[in-house]
Amino acid sequence: MSATPETALAAPTTAAELDAAVEAAQAAFEQGRLADPATRAGWLEAVAAGLEHDAAGLVETAVRETHLAAARLEGELNRTVFQLRLLADEIRLGEHFDATIDHADPEWGMGPRPDLRRYNVPLGVVGVFGASNFPFAFSVMGGDTASALAAGCAVVHKAHDAHRELAARTARAVLAALEGAGAPSGLFSLVTGRQAGEALVDHPLVKAVGFTGSTAGGRALLDRIAARPEPIPFFGELGGINAVFVTPKAWAARRADILNGYAASFTLGMGQFCTKPGLLFVPAGQAEGIRSALEAALAGFTPARLLSPRLHAGYADAVDSLRGSAGVRVLVEGDFAEEPAPTVLRTTAEAVRINPELLRQEMFGPASLVVEYADEAELPALAGLLEGQLTTTLQAEADDDVTALAARLADISGRVLWNGWPTGVTVSYAQHHGGPYPATTSATTSVGTAAIRRFLRPVAFQQFPAEQLPEPLRDSNPWRVPQRVDGVWRHPDGAAREEQQ
Image (cartoon, rainbow, N blue to C red; front, side):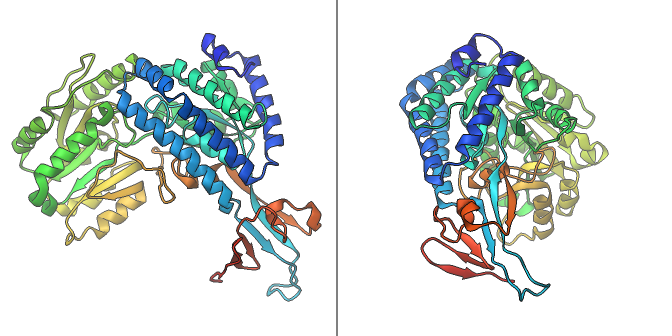
C-alpha cells in the first residue's frame, strides 16, 4: 500500500495495501530501533513542529469535519504538540529503559551469580485506532501513536471514519516531518476502512494495538485479538461513567457551586468527553431545588451538533433507554434536536440497588443521571455497584470521614478527584488515564509519560561480552542513561542512590 494520506482518503485501504504498510513498518522498526534517544527525540520534535506549521489548515479542516469549535480544537492541537515534546524530553532522560546491571558475584547469597543485565526494548509494529471525539489528542498523532513512537515502535494508524480528511492532512504533516528528520521510511503510515482495521489487528507482524472508543467496539477488538494464533497486548480505552459522590456536609456548604460545576462539566464538548461525569450521587429530598438550580446553570448553554449522525443516534437511544427504566424520572427535559439540549435524569439509591445496570449506561452526549441517597453510610456500597471507571470524584469537606468510600473508589477507578471535575486530563508525569475494565483493558495509562512503557518489554542478557551488549547495559554507558548497578541507581551526573533491599 502507498502510505500517502491522499491514497488513504481516496479509497479504503485494501488487504494488499495494508500488508505492504505493515511490512514497511517492520523494516522501519528494525532500522529505527538502533537510534539513540536523542535521535528519536528529534523525530518527535520534528513532528511537533510539522503540526504547528500547518496548525491553521488542520484546525480549519477539523472544524468543518467534526463540528467542534475552533478554540477547542486549537487547544487540543496545542496539547498534542506539547505531549510530543514532553515525550521527547522523557526519552532523552532514558529512564524508560529501566537499565539494570548485576555484575557477576561469587558471594551472592543464594550461590554464585552470573553477570546479568536487563532493559526494556520496544515491542515492534503497533496498530493504533483513532478516536472520534478527540480528532487530535487521541487520533493520528495522539497519545497512543506518540508514546509508541517514543518507545521505539513503528505505527500503522487506522483513521477514524468520522474525520478522514483531517486524518489525511495530519498524516501528511507527520510523514513530511519524519522524512525531513531522517526517520526510516514506513515508521508511520495511515490506513482507512473497516477491512484495513480488521487486517491490521490480525497481521502477524503487529505486536500491540492501541484503541480509544466505545465499549462495544473495544470488546470486539479484544475478542478478535484473543483469537489470534499469537495473542498480543491490547491497550483499549473504552470510556466510563465517571461517578461523582457528594457528601451531606459538602452539599449543605456548597450545593449551588457543586451543581454549577456539574452542569458545566457534563455538557463540556457536548458531553462527548470520555471523562464526562455521568453520575452524581447527592443527598435525597431536594429534587425541586436541584431542578431549578440546574435549569439556571444550563440557561446559558449553547448547543452544538454532535460529532456524527451515528453518535447522535446512539445518544438518543441511550437516553431513551435509561429514561424508560423503572425508577428513573426526568429532572431536566432536553431534546434530540440536531443541536440537542441537555438532559438530566433522576433516580434513587433504592432503584439502583434493584437494578445496578442503571449505573452502567453511558450516554455519550449532554446527559447525566442524578442518584439520590438517604444515608451517607450507603455510599461505599453504592460505589461497589459500579463497574470500572476512568475517574471518580469526591465532593467533600476537610472534616468528612470518607476513608472507606475513597478506598473503594481507588479500587474501581484510575483517577480519584477531590472537589474537582473530571473533564480535563493534563499531560504530565504523574497522570494516569486508565482504570479497571470496562474503562480500559489494561492496568496502564494512555496519557502522560508513563504511557511509553506500554509499548516496551524487558529482556535480560546473561554473560554477554561487553562489546555485544546494548548501549544502555554497557558499563561505559555511552547513551548516558540511568542504570541500577548492583542494586544502586547511578545517574549520568554521577549521583548514586542506595535502594532498599
